[in-house]
Length: 206
Image (cartoon, rainbow, N blue to C red; front, top):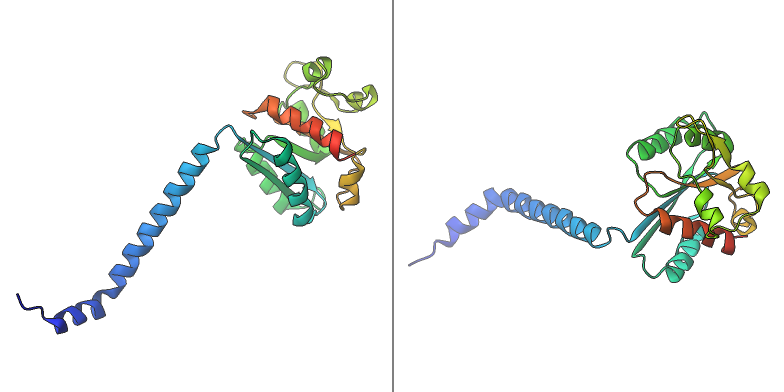
């Protein structure tokens, strides 16, 4: 059968955009599928940590993260992110924080004291008393007292966070640790691992 080269050339000349669209669709589907497979493969092996406050350079975040991954080989990924917040009037940062908390995203958060207290008393954070009692966390009593908040849910005092002003290495990296508290979220699916990371932070960043 004779092939009409002119018809083929005309076809590609006028219909080329359909091939481009088809290729883009294939790449889009491949990207979504690959990302889904990857996320499923690391499910239960990923920790998300958000430092809300002063800007912290990515190089410092990467340095901390690489050390964490070395000491927690069971984790496939640690997302350590900084959410710069200039103060209560920083609406863009507030919107991001509220979106994350509202969608139950994240395992560990660092907040200014006022924000920490507001979230803590509404039950956003994990009570740490049992981890302090069994020795998983070794924190001075004065610090645990500072992280104690009266819950609106059961009307009892709980240790919902720990002050981080003793983390001198983090402070030297440019993150002002004064009047800030670190907490594990109540909705974290990896609570025990998150508490172990809390201990790592206090052991390695003081």
